Length: 256
Ligand SMILES: CC(C)(COP(=O)(O)OP(=O)(O)OC[C@H]1O[C@@H](n2cnc3c(N)ncnc32)[C@H](O)[C@@H]1OP(=O)(O)O)[C@@H](O)C(=O)NCCC(=O)NCCS
Image (cartoon, rainbow, N blue to C red):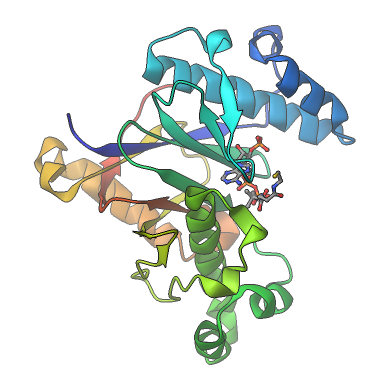
């Protein structure tokens, strides 16, 4: 079986349907009720209903039957461990990374807020020096890329921001570092979704399986990778895995 990770884009702008609500368990319903803002409740219900449909499709079971457990710092996992996954949301978008073989962490951001202040809080000393030396007009894009890399690896490990992000060096350049954390080396893959992009899974796969994908899919991914340095009009993200994989393309297909 091929070792692969799929990233699913989940648009969150639509109102949840009765079917969406019916899929959630008691814990998810309680969390949905606690949101103060209606927008946040809508996004949460849409994201969790879509996540259940995708995971059920992958695990070949019914979405309402999925049982979740949480790690020490809250990382959700399936109780039966059949599919590994990680969810991230930003604005009206969510992405879900799924894999049968590798541990995954994913983070997306639409736009950086207060880049200069947050950079000082999360970049390592060397990263901060490199950041300060950049032309002002690229700083936000470069910071956003570094930030999604850090969050992705912290989410893959499962500790989230309980670990100081300054201790995880991911690099500011177009080729990310491979940080070592929790006794493992992590591979980082930047990706981006352009506006108007149809919901479809982005698939990452181990390098020796590249031949399995048509060449035009690789080109489509490359154009998305370029979008990752234009945060104003795209959604940028990073996937962290504990096994070396290479991005090879986009696969279209409806979610759920
Ligand atoms: C994980 C964390 C970095 C997410 O930050 P974020 O950028 O605001 O959110 P994202 O949208 O990228 O990710 C949120 C999703 O990550 C997942 N998640 C939650 N905790 C996680 C963890 N420790 N590790 C990995 N993924 C986690 C959940 O699926 C969550 O989605 P949900 O809220 O709809 O269930 C942040 O919540 C954190 O540091 N948590 C760990 C520490 C903590 O506060 N734990 C409390 C319980 S012990």
